[in-house]
Length: 205
Image (cartoon, rainbow, N blue to C red; front, side):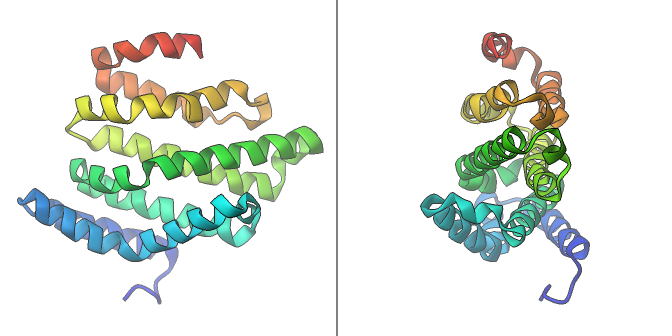
């Protein structure tokens, strides 16, 4: 049980279990163990996504922001120790994660546009930006750890272009996150020529 642990201890726990799953040689068993490990967290995630699809206003609540950030950080912890096999979990949450990223970006932009420059420093905006940043950290962690670069470039990079890079371009300056540039720099550095087919899109953005 982890119900009595602090958040940072929970993340350490997930990272430790990720190490144990990584030691399993059978890929199917790895997927099974990862699915069982993430089941309670994924149940929360699916419930949150369903509610947000009905009413995106729920994402504004302080508790929702904290819970989503915790969920994504838990994924970062597992990814950092598990590496390539984490793709099973990443594939499961990737599309919804990008949609949540987009929703928070729109909420942040609207808040700053209506509230002025000082709104960018409000606790609500900072909290929502923290969710965006941990999303970028999760992707960057996987980029650094995966051994299946070709698959990532083909399956994930195209889907990231508009929700992340396009969003960065469209945002008002106060709403832009430097972590976006860090992520794409890391992707280009890690994947080099494999990113060539995406470079024209990068230049366009």
